Image (cartoon, rainbow, N blue to C red; front, side):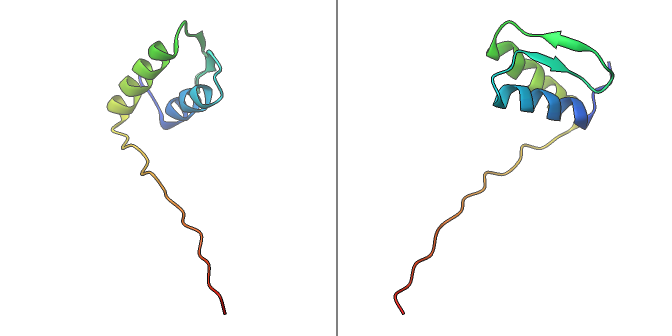
Length: 66
């Protein structure tokens, strides 16, 4: 099977919203049993398409007394 960036985005969105059912770019719909299953396939998709993990972004608030 050929994976796409859209497939990776779909499974990441499902993981982020605690949904177990994912609809992939080609129209297939898959329901996973566990979060571990979803993370496993997410890692497989990322590896197949050569995706790099998104960097962790940190934001700091600034404060000054003028």
